[in-house]
Image (cartoon, rainbow, N blue to C red; front, top):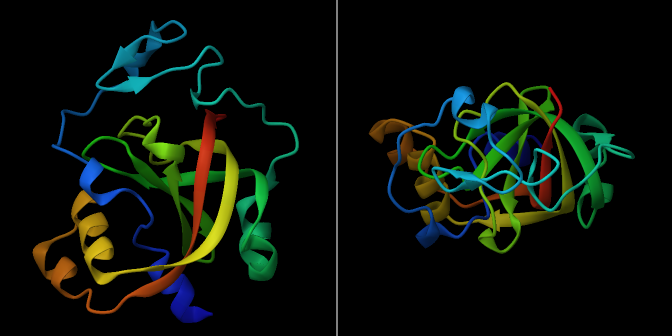
Length: 176
């Protein structure tokens, strides 16, 4: 179990070839005056002010409770609430949520169909979709570490595939 959570600090399950080139980070001010589907740096805000499918916060469970029961987590479908600790610094094509006790959960976006702002760290979100436990290859782990801005030494230190909890979100709503 400890091994599983160690890897959750990195990231998983995104289409590696789709992360593309790094872009300048948009600021919160860039999003202040957006209406329904205007885009900033490839990030489309939906009519509810979220990303992807319009979702509500009703019925969301805390990520810590999902993490506490890994049998339940594998194959979970529904809404989860958590705090973003990192997001892809190339496009906003993934993010990680704080799972408590230093553990995180990787979140990718269904069919690579939407992105989130690159400055999501520290924001509380509700996500809707499905969770599963996956094996992540060394190549993927290194790619994700690079996207997260890790040093060359940290990237080279990744030498083994890992199992981790990942979540594929249909929609994201920022709630705090």
